[in-house]
Image (cartoon, rainbow, N blue to C red; front, side):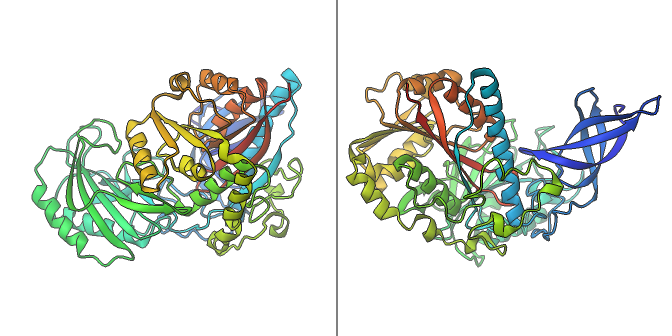
Amino acid sequence: MKKGNIYEGVVKKVEFPNKAYVDVIEKDENGNEQKTLTLVKGALPGQKIKFRAKKVRKDKSQGILLEVTEKSPLETAEPMCCRFGKCGGCSYQTLPYEKQLELKRNQVLEIIDNVYKTLDSSLGIKKDYIYDGILPSPEIKGYRNKMEFSFGDEYKGGPLTLGLHKKGSVHDIVNASGCQIVDDDYSKVIDCIVEYFREKQIPHYNKNTHQGVLRHLLVRRAVSTGELLVALVTSSQQDISEYVSEVSEKLNGLKYNGKLTGFIHIINDGLGDVVKSDKMHIISGKDWFTEKILGLQFKISPFSFFQTNTKGAEVLYTRARDYVLGGEMAGVGKNSVGVGMDVENSRINGVCSEMTAGSSDIVDGYSEKGAKNVDLADIYSEKTENLETKTNAGFKDKVVFDLYSGTGTIAQIIAPVAKKVIGVEIVEEAVEAAKENAAINGLDNCEFIAGDVLKVIDEIDEKPDYIILDPPREGIHPKAIRKIIDYGVENIVYISCKPTSLSQDLATFETFGYHVERVSNVDMFPGTVHVETVCLLTRKAQ
């Protein structure tokens, strides 16, 4: 292989999140075949692709995807979004949902199993966990409750556009009207705002020159009530207060599936391409709404942390809660992909030709027409009885630590059956929101502390009986893990949004006294590469 040359090949394997591998076969000067394994991001198993060699090494090279020349045999679904292929978002839409789940499941299992290969060879620690399957999202369309759209143009000098980044580009923006992972109300808002500001010829902000006005549009929606919160983010380079008032009137005059509860103008003069607030002005309505999850209420403001798939979050938190309360989970074994299959034999190894198991062997309780056909009540119908049983069994006198607690959602779900729950979160605004939400829900046994977990746990007088971990994408600081281990609790539940970070932390837990007992996946992001993982860890007998 030579750097800069264009090659073609069939994707043999895809690792999390989007690492596709292709064998490039060439002949040397003696006529002998040489095979070079090449990493090309963004392709699917079985696709035939063209790519340009970027880095060339003897053991593994890297390439840049140019085009897909042949579809994969797995791509039997029609993409549900008219922006598919242009938008850099939902790359799995051409895979039937059952295949999406299958691919995600196997990627996670491979990552975890690779941890045990290393542990076995170095320390003799062998894999011995139960895989409880992957739970599908209750909805595969319109499931997101929050989107951050960018203003820009689809090509240099083109008309104003509002949407998401074009695939492979950090500059070009694809119009997001018609996006299928959000409610139709989002498209109504996008169309209204783009049409208005095009007419007024207000320029978008250029992140290279740092000139311009229109930056982002933040839209949040409560699934339980249909309430919409819309925030227009601009620079302060031009006074557009009159325009903001006019567009507010237009937005309030639209007919929604739900209702517009607030329109906000946010000023952001930071240089970074992120949604943040220097100043915030409520133009109409209010700057918050209430969302409900598993019977609890949560006040959501523009920058509140909250899982972006509300119904999926109910599945995720139910599974985590069941792991905390014990092994007899209401949800395990129901509506999961891969449940009951031997973990070793259920592996697909990412090879396209092997990824053909019949759905009857893999999917329990799933309809291809949409995961919304899965009855959520079937997943957590035993909630009340299960909680009561566990409470009577003595959980009521237990102290639970919820570390990296965000706005305290998990803590408040556990609080009704615990003596006390202590949440630790580094973002002060999230801690204040957690306290407010706990008061709204009448929970007086929750304490939330602002600070770094690494430092704060040294200052807490109480000792936990259970620990729940829900760290950011990069995982847990190694020193914090050692301090968590030193508590010596019998059970730890770890929720992860990035399996590669999870694998590093699991290796540390296994090395220093804990055993991975059970593993589940929850698909919170249909059509995309992302997946949540929940692990139950138990303390090894010393």
